[in-house]
Length: 275
Image (cartoon, rainbow, N blue to C red; front, side, top):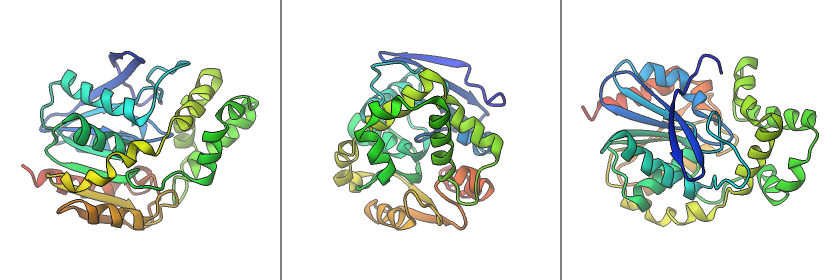
């Protein structure tokens, strides 16, 4: 990830969170999901920076942020960190764009911690039960066993798993960048740690409250998402008052990689509507 740097640091009780900001204009914060990092936003984020001050961060235990034994990297913890980050940045009402687990993090921060957003875009997000593939559930139940896989088998597993998030397939360099943080002794343990702590109760707590969202919401979904099918996006949009739904043809779960221009266009139109 030599072309993507997160030079700033924010200290939490669980370790150091890395972040960056760039561009000028109304603030927009981008949240990634699992098992990814802010790297997935590199193209879309740079495009949005033409008219926005863009904030990106790697969740605790992900990407460039600190990984260590005993960390709480649950959705509950990430939402608390995000709410604290917004205060640290001095952002009272930014626009927020969230992907995958980042969706649950942003929704928890809003509904449970009082975080204020101007607008919220949810891209192929984890928000409605049930979620988690059979593989995901298997790993969650046997995380300690998977942690002991030989490194070459772990590497193959991570690369294969990450690769399935794309509809047309990832460029080898992109796959290397997304899988890289999860390799090595520290990364391997962190990979299974975050899966083991992925508890559906953290979305169950907010699912009944989605109708309380009182801000403009855009739901974007890859029409070829095999992780979270587009029907899930339609269901989510129907539960949020006034939410708009945009389907991205040919895009899988990683719409940022599969359809960056179309996703950027949809986000730009949505974000500019509030100006």
